[in-house]
Figure 1 (cartoon, helix red, strand yellow):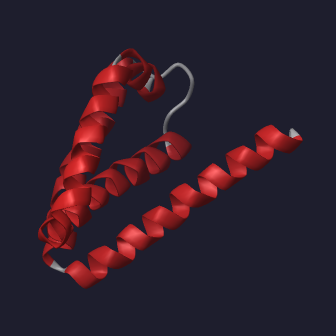
Figure 2 (cartoon, rainbow, N blue to C red):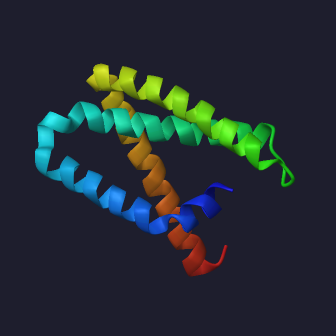
Figure 3 (spheres, rainbow, N blue to C red):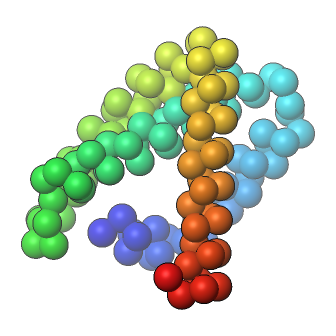
Length: 117
């Protein structure tokens, strides 16, 4: 359901991420806290989806359940992002872990598409 939603609004997400990335790139040190807050927010949502999808969801789960889980993940993500933005050292560790996770996903997808595993 999430991938369908993202695919439907792909241009809007693309432009939003380009603008946010542009700001993060050129405003530098002043946006370290907001960057860590944003990454903590995204990491919390992904973690909530991993937990709920692996434990509770099946293929015939209702759409309203998806939106409830997304709302819970966003709420937890806002709190976690603000806490991590306040404590930059811990937030930096989460950002580094998130980068390693995304890099590992990218590498595994490249290898799977290249060698067909």
